[in-house]
Length: 434
Image 1 (cartoon, rainbow, N blue to C red):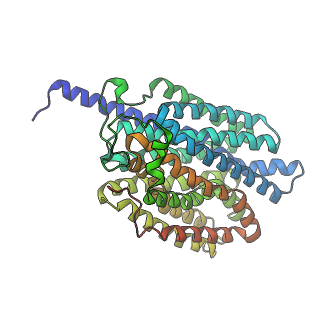
Image 2: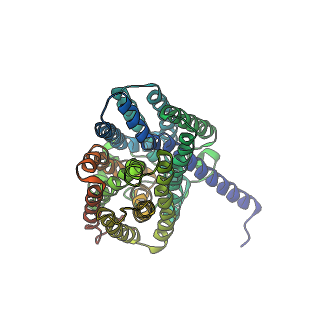
Image 3: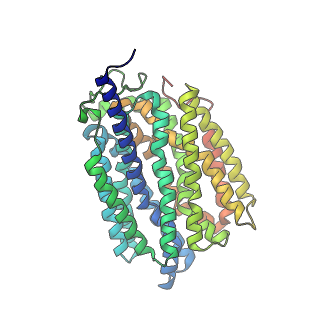
């Protein structure tokens, strides 16, 4: 049957608004990474700056690693309430407030000069940034059908992968032209500021804001007793379905292991390339962009596959990714990259391809499967929060391990993490409805 013109026009309008929403979410969250990856990229510059002030380089690495760990801890703590705030107050508020706060703390970091202020500014930055992802997941649950959760969240996940890669290339160019770490921080704050203005004027909470109905949620989510658009009336009612679900806690455990891997590579890859492969700071920053870039390709492929593999499909992809990444990490740990500038970059890119796509399921499509429209932000917040509690180890602990046992020792530890996290996956990490 040929649709009536009015119906066709409304459908076309909805498709345009969905495309605009995805564009704003992807570009906006990519902007978050301009104000997050700046620390990773500038660590070699910060170590050199602290060394000029009399601090030993190894001590500076541990201090900056500790600062990064405190930042991840603040991010993890912020994740838990961020999901509930998004579900109760709306994802748009979370998303915009996180951007504004990140700009403010990035500027504070740039104008500070002592480690205590660095640490407070970085913790504040990571704390407010914890609002962003849960806000995005909440918005996506209202704009898109559950049948497209894997594909939609794969596209949205490109924000923190291709956005991260773009940010690193941008910052590498700044460093190559002589900009110091302070200039890099101020430049990234300006980029996020421009994206905040665009989102403030164009981003909408849901199709209801333009007079359109919301697409259906997963009929097997943990809140099937509620109608579309109906909200939980208390925090206890919102949390109870998650706390009583063993499969949900399995997803949280998987998030813990995969976040350790992702955060470690996200933070230390430029330093590893500079110290072990003999690259310049600018070259190491540019090469480190291959980690999120390869991860972005993985996210698209895994998201597309998971929507077509049916029940248990996401669990199967997670299992394969973790096992194969353990093999690649073992190769790095046993010295397969020694004496080369190509092999370290290639193996890091392979690890990204194997782990980032499966990792993206946990706080994205799987959180949407669990939470539907009523609890997607909370599901994402808890899964990510547990994950980032593990991610705290990526800073101080990995700095100490890399100094005591070398980077090879650190990679062997990460290989063990990947293998251990794969053990529960012969069960399933999907919701009761897949």
